[in-house]
Image 1: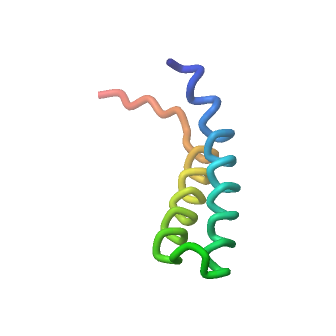
Image 2: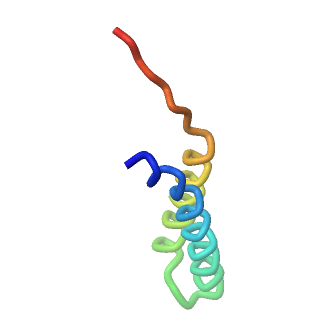
Length: 60
């Protein structure tokens, strides 16, 4: 299960590139912007979160 976490940044980078191209289609008014913009910002957020997350152990 631990190996899966390595692939999250790669997955989210491809999602961000895909959402960027969808956003370009939205700016050309081929797809509604209210669909493409939240998807684009969510993919950017998940990409940055996957790069900055730390493995933190919380002890009680």
